[in-house]
Length: 465
Image (cartoon, rainbow, N blue to C red; front, side, top):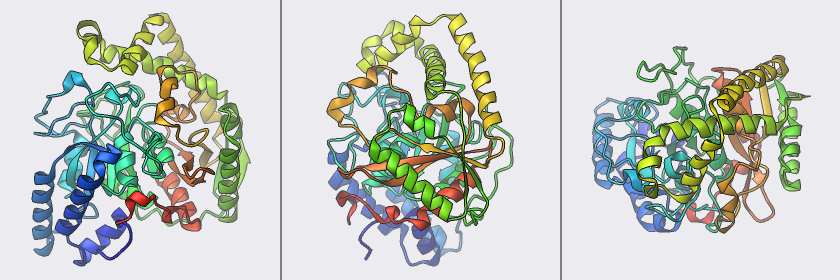
């Protein structure tokens, strides 16, 4: 491979379909990079090298024989270790399930496998997608490829590290309070949390039934569109799965933004005490979108803290219900951060939970009313760049209002994409939220912005081939 960095999924897909890129060669390259760099990034906790090579050989044979299955055929990806994989250890990054080997794939995993994607292995996560970047778990936390002293964002931490570090072309994430979009933000990627119910959670270790989403992280909006195309769709095995037609995301990417209405929620990043560099990056991104023809309108929502507190209470109570048995019988098998977070749930009564559900309805109604005349909502993904791993003590509490949680509460599709870099070379990010089941529009706006800026061409040194 003659280029300086790995191809994107879209680039690799076109080359594989044209016969100019071998899935076997691409897979071997990635396995070699995992062997060389995973000890630095801690992205993968299980590497399925033999399976990946077998799948790559089969993909190459099929494609040469004219059996090409589409854009993910022959594309090596990784799966966050809360997605069940048949015959492959799926631990939730926890001592409590250290030896668990499922007998079936999660629905989303099965769909990508059927589309010809190659499984490189299982990716690091916060414990059950809720603990923090802990050092008391079976594997150390993933590290940021831009600066390995820093956090990758989580909980889909390994996915962020693997894709940015050049160890995989794409990966799966889950998002209950921001766990796709924050790794995208801190690792300098694109990540989309689809509409609630768009992607099946069957076979994904649950955290909060009413807030859990599954989706992809990849280098570009186009790559996310290609992955989401396969992941999306109705699944009777997930009671929350929506039976709504899935559009062709790839065909809807190249869109003229002239006249598109973008509602700007400036007060969110102001309430989150965003750094001056983040605020400047937001204004610069808005200027690009305006130049592309978008019509910008400031909108006012209830306070960020109101959204975050309501989401956090629902999340805590539902998570405690999921983990009640292990918390009562074997709490020592859980990491300290997860254990303390789950114990917080005991502070809340059934009445508190019901009141939070009522407040959720009010906040969703307020959101719907405030955004009814716009196509997309714009705000920051995070208040600043990634923190240092040694400074992660704040993970024990929910005292910092989250910029991502509002869209888990509403269930709206939301994509995070890069917005430049801080003065110390760490990525900054904004997010775009859309109407229910209109992932196509947020991806199209992200794609247009991506093409109009140069951020997508900037990669960390460790990603160089």
